[in-house]
Length: 291
Image (cartoon, rainbow, N blue to C red; front, side, top):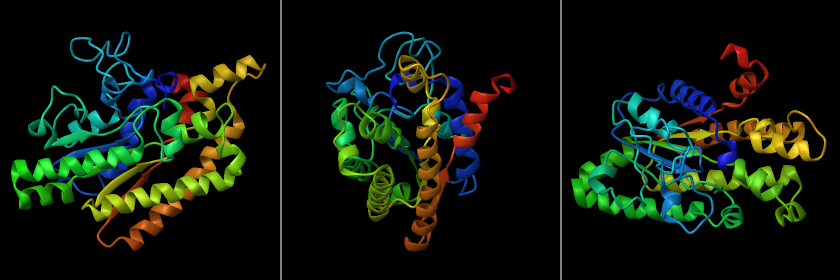
């Protein structure tokens, strides 16, 4: 997601919903390992040559000393809260942040890059880290972790860690529905949903083959109601949310749930949950006084 999309109440609700589901997996989590976009990026984009950064005020105004960290938030992001809920640590460091080392990463690390998606073409839009690169950094991390705490302990940590995946929105809003999009000429929207689902499934299998067993896969939010999309609607005289985009999100989430069911059957020993925040975020939008 881009900085236009990030609103703090939404992020807090996202982490609560994810917690409700991942807590059903196990309470024994030695580390939090995160992949995704700006919804969970804790500062990796600070180290990239991209315009998509949040290392300036008012970002971070409620984060410790009020210093922007590269999180697209006024404070912490969902992965931080989840880490704290598992009594690990209150924040999860960005892998590319030079102020941290493997000592810090041993109990939690974030590979996420704001603006990225499952589709490599999505990361090209704003010149951010593609998902395959996040995976390459994870492989590098595995070696560093085993060197630091030993082979047996390293394997155990990687096996028992909770893996969070939060991405997909940019694939649609910044890529498929983007200006002069090549993907929209290659695929119908249903075909593109299936294409993204295939990439998501492949990524989960890659993580599984590398030792991951406990994964939370985030679904799409009501992306037609995100601030940037509502602003764009105003330019063409439309008020409120873009229902077409919301319909795509609900359709995709239904398919994603099916993918999760199939992956749990296929990958022996895997515990995978679909963290679907769509309904509660839409309720916030339609009934803000409740919150």
